Amino acid sequence: MLKKNEQAKTSWLENNLPHSNRFDDTYYTRTDGRGETNHVYIQGNELPHRWMNCSHCVIAELGFGTGLNFLETARQWIEKKPVNATLDFISFEQFPLDADEIRRAISPWIELEELARILCQNWQTNRDKFEMEFPGDIRLKVNFGDANILLPSHELFADAWYLDGFSPSKNPEMWNENLMREIYKSTKSGGTFATYSVAGVVRRNLQTAGFETERAKGFGSKREMLTGCKQNKVTIPKPG
Ligand SMILES: C[S@@+](CC[C@H](N)C(=O)[O-])C[C@H]1O[C@@H](n2cnc3c(N)ncnc32)[C@H](O)[C@@H]1O
Image (cartoon, rainbow, N blue to C red; front, side):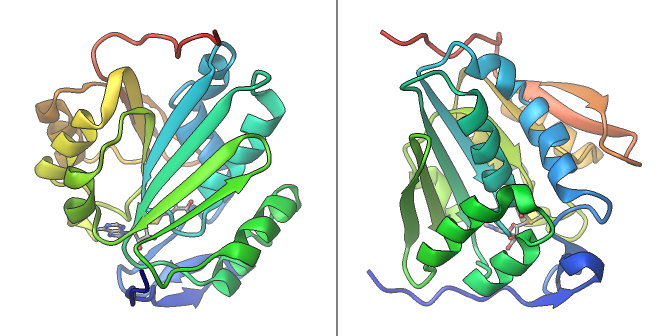
């Protein structure tokens, strides 16, 4: 079904770093966006280790943005995944960038060029959701709209969540208590989350929702980040 989604309002900083004029915040860190994705989201959820024994992994994300988190996750998954294992990556995005903006934002990373090319060739935002398959048994689904509205009616059980709204002071709707409860409901038992933010309100809302939270070393100049788990951490089931 065709739909008019609200456009992101973007300006560009040094090294093709996109800045949201709507939220007055950057999409990723100035120093090294790809390094931040690896440190905060991929290592923060201990994914490479958990992938070793998995047959199917579900990663969910708040805020698709430039697709950097997805593309770096896909790149590492293709390198590390067990044979026949599949990855579902499900994201929620209210103000999608267009293909040219994604291409430009990912251009600093030659390692992501091929996956970004496949994404941008197919990327469409004039509907409820975007779905496509990638090499490496990866299925991407991006749901367009406000995560607060979409998630409650979404049947989803994630092994790992990437909580990547803009800063809580600028984008509080992405971190509110109700949404954190929905995240908790949409996490498998033993599933995890990771986020760059250690703001008190974020930690409290995730704890109130039911997560056990832990501070970890942050990326670059950020002293801390936050990870957490729904009950006891378990490994993702083995094939067969
Ligand atoms: C920090 S950026 C995400 C960066 C992204 N993960 C990446 O890899 O480039 C935050 C994103 O959240 C989106 N967003 C803000 N409020 C939202 C909401 N209520 N529901 C869904 N998406 C939202 C913004 O449009 C933006 O793309």
